[in-house]
Image (cartoon, rainbow, N blue to C red):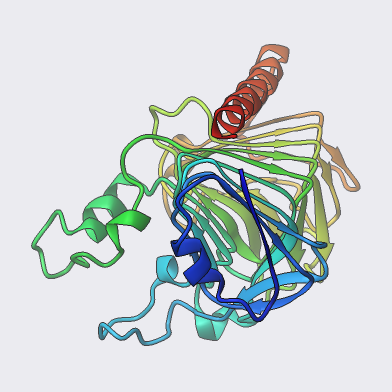
Amino acid sequence: MKTLHLAPGDDLQNILDGICEPTTIYLAEGTYRTKLWIGRDDVKIIGADRERTVICWDDYARKPHADGGEYNTFRTYTVCVTGKGCEIADLTIQNTNADPRVAGQCVALSVNAPLFRAENVDLKSMQDTLFTAPFPDDLVVRYSGLTDDPAYYDGFIPREQLRMEGGSVQIYKNCRIYGTVDYIFGCAEAYFDGCELISLHEERGHGYVAAPAHSLKQAAGYRFINCHFVSQGAAEGSVFLARPWRDFGKCEYVDCTLDGHISPLLYDKWNDSYRDRTARFADSGLKSSTPLSPAAWSRRLTEGGRAEVCEGYRRARALWEEHARQAK
């Protein structure tokens, strides 16, 4: 595997575009102000330390784009990963916009790849911090140019960044993810192991950690294992663990710790929708600093359900390890 050592003055995007083999990139400490697209397979980016190695940019949804429209959520990323088998470790990825009431959504990391891993990474933004592809089916139609209806965005997103066929398996280990509203969203089979989910102050009232949009065909959605849900300015009882971005969105929480900012209801159905009838939200072994009274339409995981979450995570790790072995 090829190895590169880079510093903040280097042109990261140009170097990434020139990679043609599995490569590990070590980033020296410092701030890398750049919008980055990792389109090559089997690229590993390792920082010197997640608090001292920072990749940042400041695009936002309401920002005017050169094509005459707005950036919209999915073009605001600081880092976008489309290469298979990429890994990021020991650094921070940040979208520096600080007020979603004005800026709208502002993505830090967008993962549009079939296999991805992050460890000891800080993801920082406010609204829509982490997007985990694939896209919901209706947005594939809307953004891919499959329709000529002028009410839709024809070719809005480059095809290389629009994952619409097949699933995605993603692992986040010992990461810290910051945000206010829907700050983990999408359709991936994603495992969050020992992560801190840090809710910031939200002027608009309620906050939401996850906004899943998994299809009914997906057996595994978002799985949070031994995670800690932390307040950094979020009001007591003001944050929900999840709300379904689309029907059938799926989240499971196993042995997680909840601070007092988490609502006793745990889950929200999404405004005036009927998604409480289709959402697949479940939990087991939650430890809370305040009494809980979970929404009646959510469920508690059985021992079998807990075992399936753990087995799914084992399979995801094995898939990753096998791919990494072959890429060497």
